[in-house]
Length: 405
Image 1 (cartoon, rainbow, N blue to C red):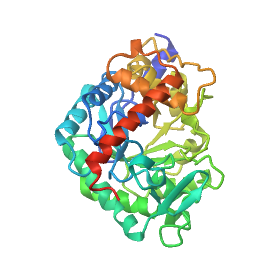
Image 2: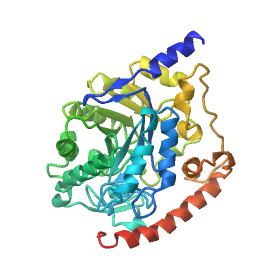
Image 3: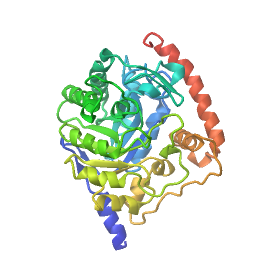
Image 4: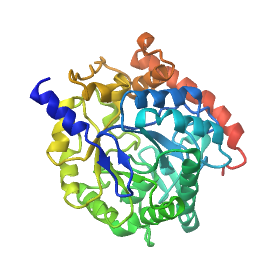
């Protein structure tokens, strides 16, 4: 074993303690992705449980289940899980148990798509009414906003009862809490708008409600944007102020990412290649402002990038999505003597959304232990993904028609 390999193992293999007292066994995290493997009625499937079991078996210290909804009214997609109302607790317990083998953690990412809610199964609402750039939504009433902390707290309690190891509050990527932070989405003139402290208020109230509901020792993380990467959106300066505000809360892990799914916006997640970690400079600044551990998400492709981010003071842990889709045992690989980085595919002129769909459909192949036979093009993956979504929209409407509105 070379000195470089030994150093990588020492850095990435070191446990990470969280303020609540929980401990992650190493510094390699499977980041939240919208796996779209729910049954269309908000419940987990055995395939979904197998997917997270594979990452746990593969050595990840923690996996995050992307886009788990606190309400069926405002989902990101019809394959999302929903932790309210009347969840299938047995299926959730199976998912929580299988995704936590080998000493791993498994946390649902609690969210609300807000203005970006999936149109065929929702009536989108955001902080303010919008009709711009292909995005149209109603504005939330004050009563709508004031109901959010309790909704997130209820979802967190369901997660705790099901046996998950923690929760992450989603305040990034252009979904509801990210919309509150962004002046592009939030034009409110009451106490939930205006300055960054006003735009942060509902997040602060939600963190407090979740913490009160789950207790002091249950991990509560949060995902934030370093920047919206949109003109008029959240800037890095304001995002650093968010970090200062979070430092006064009880959160245990701050996940730094960026970008939004605003219609027409350039998305990091649909890019063809990466030039390395996307938000490393911001994360370095953030770490100087808080004692809460920082996890960095986006653009990691090599073990050396992960090691350098932690050694260089940019992160306490690194969070990987596509790299762990290509190799679900990447954590074990990077913690081995041999190391070895995933080989990222190169696509020629894929359709818009095709690269993201390719990775999404590969998740399905992983869940079926069938990745060796996965050979879809981005165009074919996009068609398959959209066809499956359309089918699940029918199921979603049947299941939740009484609570839509």
